[in-house]
Length: 381
Image (cartoon, rainbow, N blue to C red; front, side):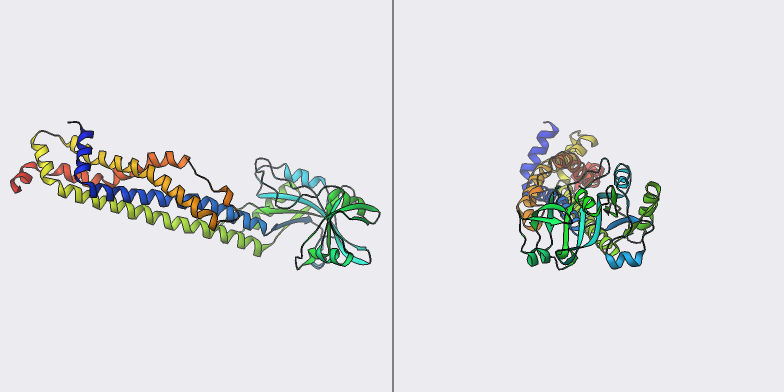
């Protein structure tokens, strides 16, 4: 009889042992796949939520008086608009989501407001991402809550700002901050209103550094900026940057701790079952050795069974884990629910790695089986 036939007979004869081993592999693979699929969603969710916290880097003219900057909320000096083109064209920088802005306080309709011109968002080459904020079209304006309430403005209304006619695109909801008295428009429109063609006074951005919290990412960011724009400087909103880094690190640590525990526990489970299988088959092994079966063929009996367990467990575990992620993931990760999908590349890896893992877990018991002296075994029988 072939080795494969002997393995099938042994599986039929010892169903409980086989099913327990299969269950161990299935659980390990299912948990890994569900955790990984959910982990991908978690990373996307964390990234999206952290991104929605807003920009955490502000690039302003180097000669800015910082006391006036913090009092006003923006720089009184300007810099060439070409800076955003120079910066956005650089590869290998740790900045992303670049937005050129021009801000100033103006008196409009008897009210002091903040006029903010925003250029379309830019990303460095090879790092294109969906835009963080809404894009403002030329000729339109977004009106802060307090201004909209005071002046009874709504979508479609036409307003005149220092001789520039704009159409209200949206009256924003209450923010509880300075945005409630802000008029946001396209950068070109703001430059026309303020007679500052080709000028900006800030570039907003997000850092793309994944340093440990003990490192100094700001020094790296400033060094990169100095190499590109010597007449500008970077300010980091540290509470926001720290919260972003801590949250990302927390998510990574959770999965880094859970998965090794699952893998080690299931490997030990498989190993114990293999040892029990060897002990139960001592007499059978002795007879096979007496009939001329060599060490290699006996080893193949145990490792072959482990490979079958690994293949079946990998296939069933993948679809079980994927089903768990698809069923429970959207309820947990609501922001990125639609992005949760089967990762079929992991089916291939599961079918490759899992049989190897089960074979390695069964290797020592297989060596024990080969080492049995058939004469001693049969004499005991």
